[in-house]
Length: 479
Image 1 (cartoon, rainbow, N blue to C red):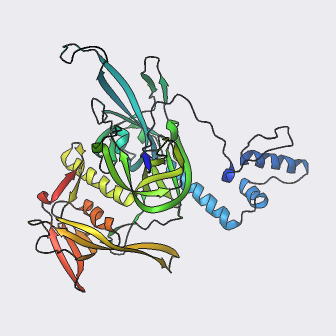
Image 2: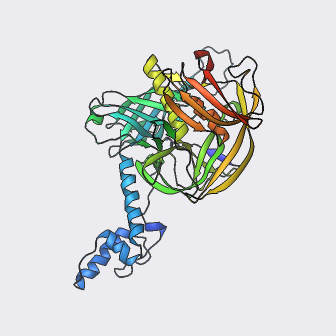
Image 3: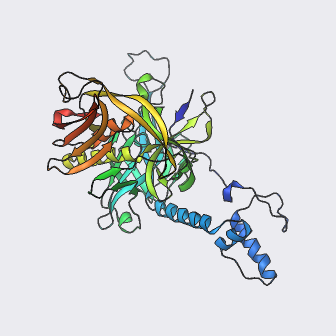
């Protein structure tokens, strides 16, 4: 049985130490009496240049050293430097997140349940996580940040959604000190106050808003670039085609020790995992999420941070890693991220709702046509244009609810092939070919009141199209 653990960090009693080594190699120097010590590749580069200087040879740049001594060709060097550039830009789109909670519990003792003045214990603690800047206005100091819901939510706290949330820009973090009475001291000199404007446990996403921050005004922060694109007609197309083997990297508040980067590859492009969001092992606290599985090493505190492709585009939001069922120990480098395509739909829905109401919404709205879907078959094929393997499913209507929006139009057995969304003015908002079962559900998160949803199906070998106009009663809030 697989067990998954979210990756927020509690107050840490010890710091982690690490040595940076190229490709994970342990290298020892012998010339200066440091046999057996692990050293970084940069120390070897410096030692090499020192030896070259003694021999009257010119110094090498770092890339020249890598090329000459480690046998990297020009194409590999270009890839390394390109990835480094992308990672460094992503640092400016990443933040640390802290959320404070208070939990009041009755003290244990031999008091009858009706005793009027049972002693209570009040505990304060913080959740430490990560976030991604999705929109920023440097002139006003305003910005929107995306993180995991479980970073700012604690089921057992007096107030389950934290009312004391701060973010910290790259290069200006915080420190946490544990006190003898079980409380903590947070050095929040660099804190930027943030407000939760939308959150959903069912999607494990929360949106934070920063307003009028001088620290943002005086920074070089930038918003992330989503892994999405617009086609020749200006329609927004979500890039769900992340591929196994693709290079990805994570930026986050690893171990609550500050923003750092780790990299790996995509292991599984889409799979479902279950998390105990209440952390109390009750059935009601388990939630299932569609995720991308990666080999990127992540740690407590990475929750809510970005997963990026080699071009620096956001492809996911880190939310968990696998643990061994028996011991609770972390498995090596098996981490999970919520796909950016779906995250963006959730985020845009939350922001639209906030900007129209001005209030925090617990949950996200999704259009309901009144159908359930099923995957009839699944297969993989090699795309000769890209040399990548693609999984495709045949998705059909499993049932239609009587009296629903789709009742009388869609029928059980219809094979879904495409869904198109248009706003009230007739402009195309999003087109989605139904090649995986999750497409049919997730695209409906982009629907707003007054939009038209056009569904294309194959029935008895013929293509048929049905259009539905969405009223407020067709939008359901999912907490």
